[in-house]
Amino acid sequence: MCDDRGSLIFYTGAMVFEGDPFYNVEKDHLVHEAGTISFDASGRMICDNFETDHLGSTRRIVRTIWGQSTVGDVTNYYPFGLAWNSQYTNLDQNKYLFSGKELQDAAVGRFGMLHLYDFGSRFYNPTMARWFNVDPALQGVNPYVYCGNSPVVHVDPDGEFFFSLFAGPVGAILDAACWGAVVGGATYTASVALSSGGFDN
Image (spheres, rainbow, N blue to C red):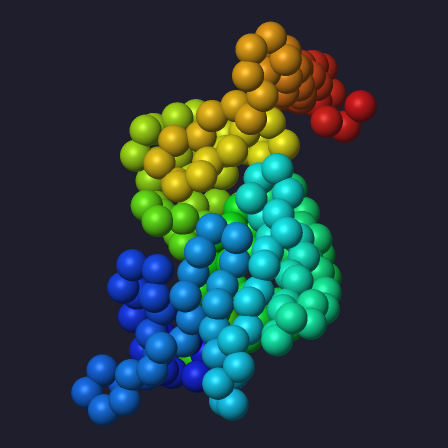
């Protein structure tokens, strides 16, 4: 994987290395469940702790250097994972954003950055709200939609299988309401289209 500067990125367990594998490879950072640990040019340890929401999306970074903590980047998301106002300006601080997944920010020619989240099994594009690969579990009508087109109710932690975020009766009621809205909308649209005069009414 290349980063936005054309440098190669290597992953070995929790360690992330960057550089050219034949000449110079440097340790970039260590990933742990609450954030990352890295070192600046003077050798000071930088601990970035990610404050997350119920989906695991990083909402705020608290950066600690030599015992001094500051609030860093704050990111808000649309339901399908696109950052509000395309807030991808501080990717040097954090690439683990929506659902806690790493944003691939490699440059793609003159078109800008790649802009895909690496969920492990599949890559996800939050702009289109679609996966780049077919759903391995073949859930739903369209195998490319994210979380059955219902990201408020469902979650897909690794790109292999989405499930309801709410368990028990609450989950069943929310699932039924979402599917009822889909069926109701499709039925209404079909009835208008098939009526005399169609959509011209």
